[in-house]
Amino acid sequence: MTKAEHLQAVATLVPGHFNDHAVERIDRTFNLVRIERADPALVTDEMRGNVRAIASFAGISAAMMDALPNLELIASFGVGYDSVDAVHAAANNIMVTNTPDVLTEEVADTAIGLLINTVREMYAAEKWLRDGSWVNKGNYPLSRLTLRGRHVGIFGMGRIGQAIARRLEAFGLTVAYHNRRQVEGLAYAYHPTLKGLAEAVDTLISVAPGGASTEKAVNAEILAALGANGVFVNIGRGSTVDEAALGAALANGTIAAAGLDVFADEPNVPKALLDAPHTSLLPHVGSASDHTRRAMADLCVDNLVSWFTERRPLTPVPETVKVVARS
Image 1 (spheres, rainbow, N blue to C red):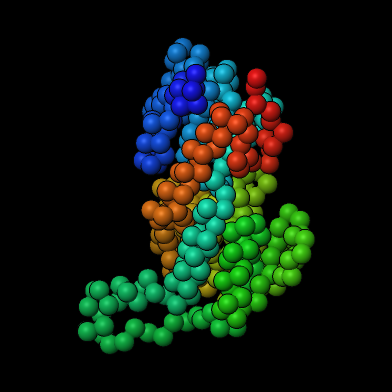
Image 2: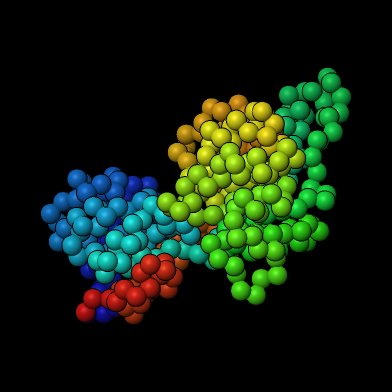
């Protein structure tokens, strides 16, 4: 059997909506199997017998894995994989891969754009022009805030956090950070607690991953520590923020402004945030360019190809680095 024939025999399940370029490559290379969503109840007997891989945007639960006894690999599209039960996968010798690095610079660009948009009120200034206020009312009012002299804290100093930090340095801003642990060789000031970081800065950018350990980590206490001149930007995961507390903090002036690209229950955005003053809200577009999403799609599929030809992943997640391909 040739390499191409071998791959075409590998049944690869794609639940729900998926990147078109990735689907095209999977369809050309593997035996593509579609399903409406990642629901064990939708798994057929044929899928149970044949499916060896999943490629997915969506979360893959332990129950979904258990419904596919021949599953070897979950190729997750995106750098964050908190919606995949990677611990269960590791315990059942299932490899999980993600798509790091290829989206780092795009997301960092978005974070800086969102920060500037929020601080200088460009979302409101453009509306002022478009609705005729510039003609009828004169110049847009001076922005209350500026980047000048700001001290920025980054919550989550991984690849994307470090890319954001490099950009902030170019703006002449000081940078500090909070992580689960200090990053070796990094010169930025490290704070062992998120509250300590919030107290030390006036601008907090969250790039933290989702999951139980970060659930609502940015809460009323953290926002109060950030202070009345504080700006909060979230480019990481919506689950890391207590959105009710954030809405209240914006409404009562506990902090000055917020820029958000992610939300806890997407695409549903809480009314308190929609109504909050001094906010810039984006529909989770951090990596959403054709260029970057195509690179993510290619890495997702390249992981599938590498696993089923060379029996090794390209970008395994930490939980499954010790998973060994079945003979």
